[in-house]
Length: 41
Image (cartoon, rainbow, N blue to C red):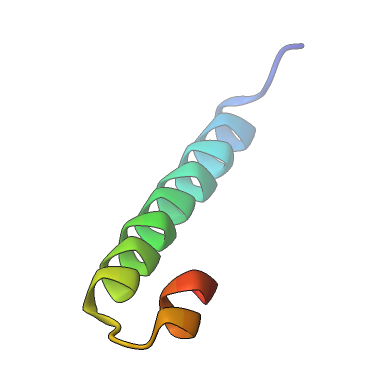
C-alpha cells in the first residue's frame, strides 16, 4: 500500500499521540493508590 506524504505524516502523528497516551496512563497507574483506579489506568 502506498501512502502520500500527507497520509504518512498524519499516521505518524497519530502514532505519536498514542504513544504519549500510553505513557500518561502508565504514569497515572503508578501514581494511583486505589487498586481499582490502577486497574482502570
